[in-house]
Image 1 (tube, rainbow, N blue to C red):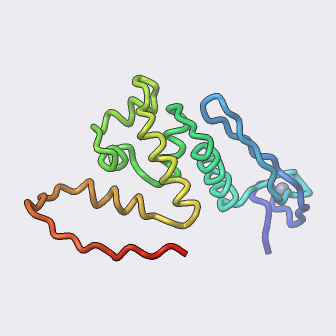
Image 2 (cartoon, rainbow, N blue to C red):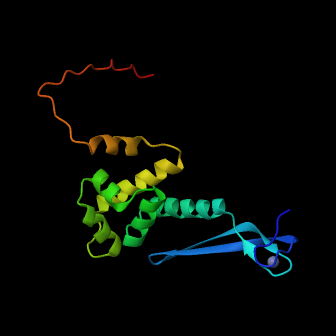
Length: 157
Ligand SMILES: [Zn+2]
């Protein structure tokens, strides 16, 4: 039987819990169902709800094209990347990402958009761009001659 971590009470009631998080100068909020101990009022939210909230925030930031240091950091963390990992994918120095995030240096707008694309792809269960960036971040030799096979143009209609 489940017991309250505070008072060991066994009776819980369903409540709605408001979550609030600030990223840069934007506030994000949501309401989720939660349970509260009838005895002492102790309430917990599931780790999964917390993660879904973080994911929804990252997605909203990506959709709006947010490019503050805090927004950039929230999106990077949602992608599960350390700043050095993301720096390698974007082909910038490792310190550059930290400087963007702390506001010491203006963020490259193209980098912010690309990170937004990665976030939106992830929320759609896709990862083509991430895979492509990983491949491109490895050094490779460029062949002198490249033979291409062209697909036939399809007739319209
Ligand atoms: Zn309790």
